[in-house]
Amino acid sequence: QVQLVQSGAEVKKPGASVKVSCKASGYTFTGYYMHWVRQAPGQGLEWMGWINPNSGNTNYAQSFQGRVTMTRDTSISTAYMELSSLISDDTAVYYCAREAAYGSGSPFDYWGQGTLVPVSS
Amino acid sequence: DIQVTQSPSSLSASVGDRVTITCRASQSISSFLNWYQQKPGKAPKVLMYDATNLQTGVPSRFSGSESGTDFTLTISTLQPEDFATYYCQQSYSTPWTFGQGTKVEIK
Image (tube, rainbow over all chains, first blue to last red; front, side, top):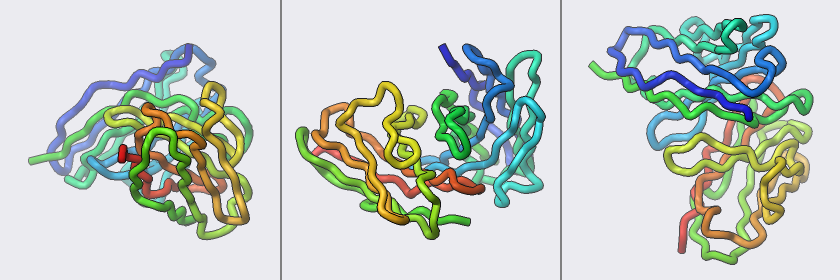
Protein backbone atom coordinates (compact mmCIF):
# COMPACT_ATOMS: atom_id res chain seq x y z
CA GLN A 1 0.00 0.00 0.00
CA VAL A 2 1.10 3.56 -0.65
CA GLN A 3 2.79 5.21 2.32
CA LEU A 4 4.54 8.51 2.84
CA VAL A 5 6.52 8.57 6.07
CA GLN A 6 7.98 11.86 7.19
CA SER A 7 10.82 12.64 9.56
CA GLY A 8 10.14 13.62 13.14
CA ALA A 9 9.46 16.95 14.77
CA GLU A 10 12.29 19.46 14.97
CA VAL A 11 12.53 22.57 17.14
CA LYS A 12 14.40 25.37 15.43
CA LYS A 13 15.66 28.81 16.38
CA PRO A 14 14.97 31.88 14.27
CA GLY A 15 17.43 32.14 11.41
CA ALA A 16 18.07 28.42 11.26
CA SER A 17 17.13 25.97 8.50
CA VAL A 18 15.08 22.80 8.61
CA LYS A 19 15.14 19.83 6.25
CA VAL A 20 12.15 17.50 6.31
CA SER A 21 12.20 14.12 4.62
CA CYS A 22 9.37 12.12 3.10
CA LYS A 23 10.02 8.46 2.35
CA ALA A 24 7.67 6.92 -0.19
CA SER A 25 6.78 3.26 -0.50
CA GLY A 26 4.21 1.11 -2.25
CA TYR A 27 4.44 2.79 -5.65
CA THR A 28 6.93 3.95 -8.27
CA PHE A 29 8.46 7.04 -6.67
CA THR A 30 9.49 8.64 -9.95
CA GLY A 31 6.03 8.33 -11.44
CA TYR A 32 4.24 10.94 -9.35
CA TYR A 33 4.88 14.58 -8.49
CA MET A 34 5.43 15.30 -4.81
CA HIS A 35 4.09 18.47 -3.24
CA TRP A 36 4.70 20.16 0.07
CA VAL A 37 1.93 21.86 2.03
CA ARG A 38 2.14 23.50 5.41
CA GLN A 39 -0.39 24.34 8.11
CA ALA A 40 0.26 26.82 10.88
CA PRO A 41 -1.38 26.05 14.25
CA GLY A 42 -5.14 26.48 13.99
CA GLN A 43 -4.84 27.79 10.44
CA GLY A 44 -5.55 26.60 6.91
CA LEU A 45 -3.46 24.86 4.31
CA GLU A 46 -0.73 26.60 2.32
CA TRP A 47 0.85 25.12 -0.80
CA MET A 48 4.64 25.47 -0.92
CA GLY A 49 5.62 23.83 -4.19
CA TRP A 50 6.27 20.60 -6.02
CA ILE A 51 9.10 18.45 -7.24
CA ASN A 52 9.07 16.05 -10.16
CA PRO A 53 10.98 13.10 -8.68
CA ASN A 54 11.83 11.82 -12.14
CA SER A 55 13.54 14.94 -13.49
CA GLY A 56 14.20 16.85 -10.29
CA ASN A 57 12.39 19.88 -11.69
CA THR A 58 10.71 22.07 -9.12
CA ASN A 59 8.05 24.76 -8.91
CA TYR A 60 7.90 26.90 -5.78
CA ALA A 61 5.26 29.27 -4.50
CA GLN A 62 6.44 32.85 -4.88
CA SER A 63 6.09 33.42 -1.14
CA PHE A 64 8.83 30.86 -0.49
CA GLN A 65 11.14 31.67 -3.40
CA GLY A 66 14.72 31.98 -2.28
CA ARG A 67 14.06 30.20 1.02
CA VAL A 68 12.80 26.77 0.00
CA THR A 69 14.63 23.96 -1.76
CA MET A 70 12.97 20.69 -2.75
CA THR A 71 15.16 17.75 -3.66
CA ARG A 72 14.88 14.01 -3.98
CA ASP A 73 16.99 10.87 -3.75
CA THR A 74 15.51 8.31 -6.13
CA SER A 75 17.78 5.54 -4.79
CA ILE A 76 15.87 5.60 -1.51
CA SER A 77 12.52 6.96 -2.79
CA THR A 78 12.73 10.00 -0.56
CA ALA A 79 11.79 13.62 -1.12
CA TYR A 80 13.16 16.49 0.93
CA MET A 81 12.02 20.02 1.69
CA GLU A 82 14.49 22.47 3.17
CA LEU A 83 13.35 25.86 4.43
CA SER A 84 15.94 28.42 5.47
CA SER A 85 16.01 31.70 7.40
CA LEU A 86 13.23 30.50 9.65
CA ILE A 87 11.04 32.96 11.51
CA SER A 88 8.35 32.36 14.11
CA ASP A 89 5.65 32.53 11.42
CA ASP A 90 7.17 29.41 9.88
CA THR A 91 5.95 27.42 12.88
CA ALA A 92 3.72 24.84 11.27
CA VAL A 93 3.08 21.23 10.43
CA TYR A 94 4.73 20.45 7.10
CA TYR A 95 3.17 17.78 4.91
CA CYS A 96 4.37 16.00 1.81
CA ALA A 97 1.56 14.97 -0.50
CA ARG A 98 1.54 12.88 -3.65
CA GLU A 99 -0.23 14.25 -6.67
CA ALA A 100 -2.50 11.62 -8.20
CA ALA A 101 -1.95 10.65 -11.82
CA TYR A 102 -5.39 11.52 -13.16
CA GLY A 103 -3.97 14.12 -15.50
CA SER A 104 -3.20 17.79 -15.25
CA GLY A 105 -4.19 19.32 -11.94
CA SER A 106 -4.79 16.07 -10.10
CA PRO A 107 -5.58 16.15 -6.37
CA PHE A 108 -3.30 15.02 -3.57
CA ASP A 109 -4.29 11.41 -3.03
CA TYR A 110 -1.77 10.42 -0.36
CA TRP A 111 -0.29 12.52 2.42
CA GLY A 112 2.51 12.08 4.90
CA GLN A 113 1.69 12.16 8.59
CA GLY A 114 3.07 15.68 8.95
CA THR A 115 6.19 17.07 10.62
CA LEU A 116 5.85 19.73 13.29
CA VAL A 117 8.47 22.45 13.13
CA PRO A 118 8.22 24.94 16.01
CA VAL A 119 10.42 28.01 15.55
CA SER A 120 11.25 29.63 18.83
CA SER A 121 14.15 31.40 20.47
CA ASP B 1 -2.72 34.20 -7.96
CA ILE B 2 -6.17 32.63 -8.06
CA GLN B 3 -8.11 33.25 -4.86
CA VAL B 4 -10.58 30.69 -3.61
CA THR B 5 -13.20 32.00 -1.22
CA GLN B 6 -14.90 29.36 0.88
CA SER B 7 -18.09 29.77 2.90
CA PRO B 8 -19.26 29.44 5.55
CA SER B 9 -16.21 29.36 7.82
CA SER B 10 -18.14 27.16 10.24
CA LEU B 11 -21.54 25.58 10.63
CA SER B 12 -23.43 23.58 13.20
CA ALA B 13 -25.48 20.64 12.05
CA SER B 14 -27.11 17.51 13.35
CA VAL B 15 -26.65 13.92 12.29
CA GLY B 16 -28.91 13.33 9.32
CA ASP B 17 -28.81 16.94 8.09
CA ARG B 18 -27.96 17.95 4.54
CA VAL B 19 -24.88 20.18 4.51
CA THR B 20 -23.62 22.43 1.72
CA ILE B 21 -20.24 24.18 1.50
CA THR B 22 -19.36 26.62 -1.26
CA CYS B 23 -16.15 27.83 -2.88
CA ARG B 24 -15.87 30.66 -5.37
CA ALA B 25 -12.79 31.10 -7.53
CA SER B 26 -11.55 34.56 -8.48
CA GLN B 27 -11.32 33.52 -12.14
CA SER B 28 -12.16 30.57 -14.33
CA ILE B 29 -10.48 27.36 -13.17
CA SER B 30 -12.34 25.04 -15.50
CA SER B 31 -13.22 22.06 -13.28
CA PHE B 32 -9.90 21.95 -11.44
CA LEU B 33 -11.39 22.07 -7.98
CA ASN B 34 -10.77 19.47 -5.28
CA TRP B 35 -12.30 18.93 -1.86
CA TYR B 36 -10.54 17.60 1.26
CA GLN B 37 -11.65 16.57 4.72
CA GLN B 38 -9.35 17.06 7.70
CA LYS B 39 -9.83 15.77 11.22
CA PRO B 40 -7.87 17.15 14.19
CA GLY B 41 -4.26 16.02 14.24
CA LYS B 42 -4.56 14.23 10.91
CA ALA B 43 -3.53 14.92 7.34
CA PRO B 44 -6.22 15.99 4.89
CA LYS B 45 -8.02 13.34 2.87
CA VAL B 46 -9.28 13.92 -0.66
CA LEU B 47 -13.03 13.54 -1.14
CA MET B 48 -13.75 14.94 -4.60
CA TYR B 49 -11.59 15.86 -7.56
CA ASP B 50 -12.25 17.76 -10.76
CA ALA B 51 -15.29 19.29 -9.04
CA THR B 52 -17.65 16.36 -9.41
CA ASN B 53 -15.64 13.14 -9.24
CA LEU B 54 -15.84 11.06 -6.08
CA GLN B 55 -12.47 9.75 -4.94
CA THR B 56 -12.33 5.96 -4.69
CA GLY B 57 -13.48 4.75 -1.30
CA VAL B 58 -15.36 7.91 -0.34
CA PRO B 59 -19.01 7.40 0.62
CA SER B 60 -21.62 8.37 -1.96
CA ARG B 61 -23.30 10.79 0.46
CA PHE B 62 -20.59 13.23 -0.66
CA SER B 63 -21.14 14.98 -3.96
CA GLY B 64 -19.82 18.00 -5.81
CA SER B 65 -21.22 20.42 -8.32
CA GLU B 66 -20.07 23.44 -10.27
CA SER B 67 -21.56 26.47 -11.93
CA GLY B 68 -19.04 28.75 -13.57
CA THR B 69 -16.61 29.76 -10.86
CA ASP B 70 -18.85 28.54 -8.04
CA PHE B 71 -18.33 25.07 -6.61
CA THR B 72 -20.32 23.19 -4.01
CA LEU B 73 -19.66 20.21 -1.77
CA THR B 74 -22.80 18.54 -0.44
CA ILE B 75 -23.12 15.94 2.27
CA SER B 76 -26.56 14.48 1.76
CA THR B 77 -27.04 12.88 5.18
CA LEU B 78 -24.49 13.96 7.77
CA GLN B 79 -22.93 11.10 9.71
CA PRO B 80 -21.06 11.28 13.06
CA GLU B 81 -17.73 10.68 11.32
CA ASP B 82 -18.29 13.68 9.03
CA PHE B 83 -17.67 16.27 11.74
CA ALA B 84 -14.41 17.75 10.52
CA THR B 85 -12.95 20.69 8.62
CA TYR B 86 -13.38 20.80 4.86
CA TYR B 87 -11.13 22.59 2.36
CA CYS B 88 -11.46 23.28 -1.32
CA GLN B 89 -8.37 23.65 -3.49
CA GLN B 90 -7.86 24.86 -7.04
CA SER B 91 -5.36 22.94 -9.14
CA TYR B 92 -5.80 24.97 -12.34
CA SER B 93 -2.62 26.99 -12.00
CA THR B 94 0.24 27.48 -9.60
CA PRO B 95 0.34 28.54 -6.89
CA TRP B 96 -2.29 25.98 -6.02
CA THR B 97 -4.50 27.65 -3.46
CA PHE B 98 -6.84 26.42 -0.77
CA GLY B 99 -10.02 27.86 0.60
CA GLN B 100 -9.99 29.05 4.19
CA GLY B 101 -11.79 25.96 5.46
CA THR B 102 -15.24 25.14 6.83
CA LYS B 103 -15.51 23.57 10.25
CA VAL B 104 -18.57 21.34 10.55
CA GLU B 105 -19.55 21.04 14.21
CA ILE B 106 -22.19 19.11 16.07
CA LYS B 107 -25.33 21.08 16.87
